[in-house]
Amino acid sequence: MWPIAITIVVVLIFCWFSPSRFNTSDDLMINELIEVELNGSRQWISIRGTNLSNPVLLFLHGGPGSANITKLRVQCPELEDHFIVVNWDQRGAGKSYWAWLRGEHPTYAVLQLDTHELVSYLRNRFNGQKIYLMGFSWGSVLGLQTVHDYPEDFVAYIGVSQEVDFQQAEQLSLAYVQQTAQRLNDPKAIDELASINPTYQSEDWYDQLMRERKWLTQYQGVYHTTNNFNHEAMMLLKAPEYSLLDFAAWPISSAKSLQKIWPELMQVSMFDDVPSVEVPLYFLVGAYDQNAPSTLTESYYDFVNAPQGKQLIWFEESAHDIFYDQPDLLVQTVIGIKEDCQE
Image 1 (cartoon, helix red, strand yellow):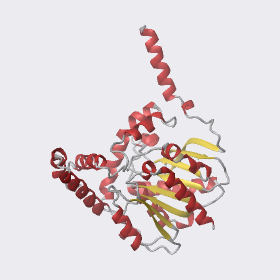
Image 2: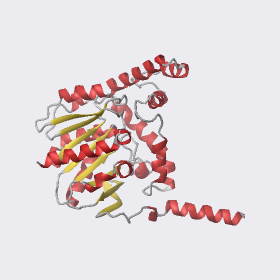
Image 3: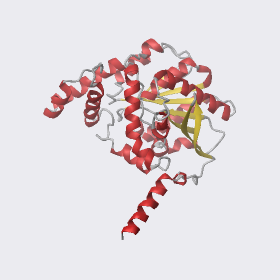
Image 4: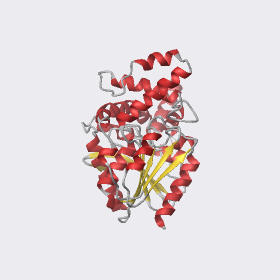
């Protein structure tokens, strides 16, 4: 019995680690999972689409460090019929976690340059065409700054759950969970939230942030239709794009990326850094979002100068992760943005 058990374990491990786990049999014109060099660092991207004549949509994941190459494929597969969809595990995150071992540590400035180099790579590969850039959560900071700095590279910018000002956002987010805990008379939450300083500058700031995020998720400020992250873990576990080693390293690299970059982000305000943008802007906002509070996004929308046009699009049954709460409406909205830009 023992040799048989060992054999089964070996076979399972081989299947998880083997590149053949990535299924290339989908009915797609392009379906690649490849490693590219960006700014001196080897990083992973996926490229998927049913029609090579479609424009490129580059997705910037959240976090920092919350890589998920499989997110759009699973939650918004119809986008692949309308775009060449590119997902990227940013330096130090997801399949690109080896950057930590090579000493290629992410910073805000480094990731901005990585983003620009990836856009240049995609434009060169796909006949010089301009890119649709979609940033989600932390990725929306990276995305908005990039279109501000290099507007000539883009058709339009789509900010999903747009981050605007981290100091203001964290104060509003903490106030929401504290008020909810009081309203529900939740003694455990009240106790855990009482000692949190939303400037997150103390030595134990990361532990404080994780406590706040735990209750923010529990009180449905991240997802409107669930109160846990279980579906995210299962999506990663089942993904052929990730090996078992990738899956095991994911929470480590995610935590390291967040701890490295977050102190910089607490100084970021789009009101100061990006007062105007020379490409069409589309902000997709969850009405129940308390992670990137929708009131701040609305204020920034009113503030930002966008000569090429701007739209604020509300998702009335979503919180922060619109991809999970209202994926079908998000897909139709993004397709509509493409049609709008092609008129």
